[in-house]
Length: 435
Image (cartoon, rainbow, N blue to C red; front, side):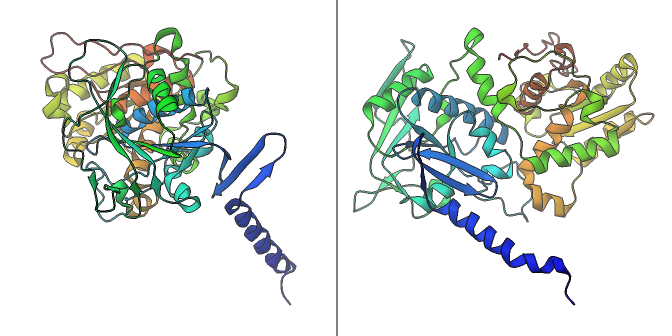
């Protein structure tokens, strides 16, 4: 006799099929006007029928955490555009980067949902993954504006269609279609191409796009040329974009699991319970953090770029040992791109203390990808009682921002290692959260 529970399986299967179909086909929502509701997994997009779409790309050489910063600039550009008419930000797939070293893992054209809570992103501006956009519409880009700097900067707020300053790798075929790499998606092409010299506020770019373009899908390559343009009392828009960038739950869960098992850290004890960012209007600095010091020890290519501002392994360990004594702590968490030999050297200098590193199995790397492993590192680091980072590192920047969001005292966050021979060791500026 079958277990009674088996009888409900066909109904569940039917329900799942119906849910899948409801995510594929658009439907209208009476009071809010026609909208398209599109789902992938647990991600749902509400897109107005008359919406226009903005896709962007970044210089191929840029790293993972700089790309996160560019996302915020483009998201806030879309925010400005939505003050005029409905626009949706198309999320470009993550492609393999030079510092993603796991060559046996498929890391081409990864979706944003691998790393971030796309539903949370959508609470700031409407978003859709490029792959999902293509499934619903023809893979045609109406207009490309390849961003570049202004050669002779004589005035803030300069924008103009201009000659291309360098080879853009865009080529026009015999049919007049503009071909490009387009994230490795061969069927995409563009109808129109221009180079756009730009130096100014995001609002200026929004005005240009609103008044000088008519296409359904606009593409902005080299979006790192956009500037934040929201500082001081106006920086709440920056922080809205930043707070919306919640990490994907599987990555947060993995980091939380490591904290519990190796560092004796949990959100209730540490006073770091995460709330829905859209409901948080202010945040008292009451986060305590786990009873460990988190260290971001940047090595690799940074040693050649900023070697004078980075410590030797020995000096870094000496500084951490002093901090452990001062803070009456015994545990250290290390996030680093250094070699295994460098990590073991660091541990050897701290033999009397507990030194931990998140070291995923090959199976976990296959699940989380190199970008996810980096996020898990950052998630563990941002929950520490005290954090110290590396000069000029975007990883350290992102960890400090996370700690601002969680509500840590700034004295426990805005710290960096000094170079062994660095005479003037300036500590990081306090980039304070604004609500």
